[in-house]
Length: 83
Image 1 (spheres, rainbow, N blue to C red):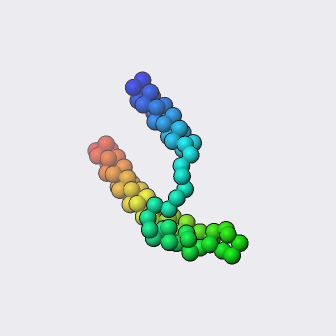
Image 2: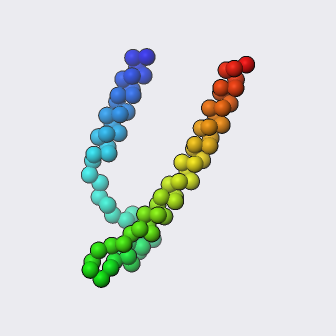
Image 3: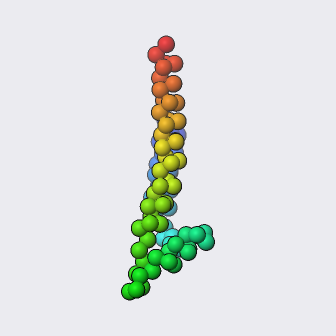
C-alpha cells in the first residue's frame, strides 16, 4: 500500500511539473504550419478555430477507443469475480 501511495504522489508531482513547464507553441508538421499561416487576418491576428477543431477531432477517436476497451475489460473482470 505504501509503495502504491508513493508512486501515486510521484506521478501527480510529475504531471503537475510537466503541465507547468513552458512549451513552444509552434506548428510541427508542414500541413499544420500551412493552415496557421493561411489563417492570418488583415490585422495580423490568427483565426485557428478550424485547426483547433481538427485537433479535438483527432484526439476524440483514441479516447473513445480506450474508453470502450476499458469498459469491456472492467465488465469482463467483474463477471469473473461474481462467479
